[in-house]
Length: 179
Image (tube, rainbow, N blue to C red; front, side, top):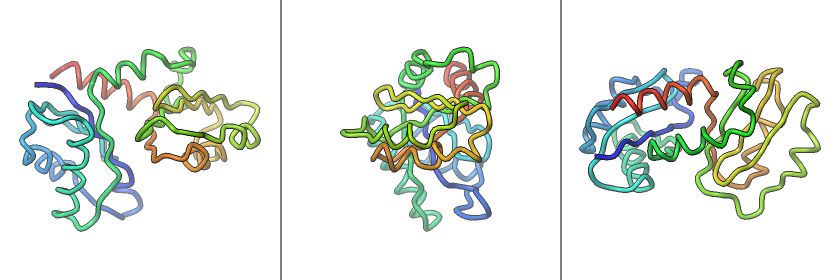
């Protein structure tokens, strides 16, 4: 059994795409997964699976949600090791002291031709970012809600992303090692 982490985008936000975590757990278990655990209401699931790769598991979970709920959220699945690797190469280790200011945008795949110049053009003096493989790291000490860079990152990168703050990353790493 391998440990996987599913990151769902756009559920339980503003009363749209409502998916209670107990229902999400049941859907993941229905795919044959074991030891299913969730973290907060925004779609973070840690589970064990014997078969399938991360991409296939993400497709299957998206299909199951669509069949059950009538909407299909973007669903990125990583192995626990992939998330550990992304955390290990964090270019801003000093920022972990303020975990809400550091965000990992997990990309569906590494971008072929990201437009980083357009991001540099709108970057605040306090913001820093780095693209490493399939992860875009953003340190936004003034908050992500007001960051133009955060809002424009996905378009500039040219691939679907979903972001998690460092606190969530740490909790997912903890949950994935408890399994």
